Image (cartoon, rainbow, N blue to C red; front, side, top):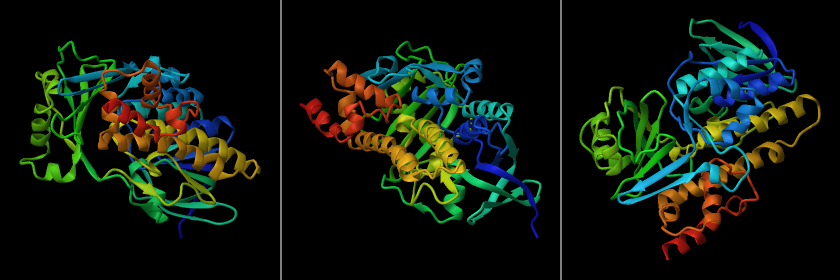
Length: 410
């Protein structure tokens, strides 16, 4: 019989950004929190370009000083190029109030800083411990846990938050997964010693490049503070399957077709294994249940194009911490109206922009030569992560993008 080794107020699955921030926020409210993390930190993760909206949630969790001390690459915007076209958005000139700058981070270091800060604040984290089963009743949730040393035990909690990211622990165990309505795409990526001297490249901004012949193929270039960068390409699965060679040769060939990007990376040294992720977009049937809720990528992941993943993860952590607090305090919160609906409001804004990117509407807006300053500030706000600001007409009604794209095409 598996022994119970601990009863907690909240168990969080995963020590990534959503798990670390949610656990810290709940610890501040006086709850006993346990985090179960399958991996050992530091560990590699993709998604390295933060959005300014994220800073609000890091500040709430008391983690901002540690992030600022880590000397990550400063970021103030995003630049876009396609052939001879080029434009950029300075996040300090956005429509919405709030942070206008952030950082571009190596996720192995960034995630460890967050997890270490949660521990310093009093959160218990068990690394190398994987959740293998979940069940709940009217009083508690029970989790079966297996360590990487082979120990099997059970923990109990009043509530469980799943911040397991692409591991999607509870969606798998509870059969909550469902297909995304976004097209299946593949990403090839790596880290490089960039050796960039091209003065067209601003290290304070992520560079997004559109393939000159295929508008649904795009690249990211995310500079770090140590002379290295993250570079990757996103393309339809069939397009990459038709190319010759392994993942590295395909990535090299596509970078060579990136015009300005190819020039910028002319002296780069590709010295790290090329990674590959397929069919990364995902969705779930529900974001919460009687004694659980899903955070960040464990619930839904859209697409890497606007670096929204960490922002959505931290927003979900902030929302969920408040609703869990209300539930454990006996206030009977409405999880749909206080968590799922407000979270999805921003996700739906990002989704409209992701779909608009791939069908060309948003690209037409970004590369339009004559954009009204006010409209550019509104678009800039969403690109900066402020997808929940209902004072922004393009958040209140994301479908306005259709009209804007048509005007830009004229």
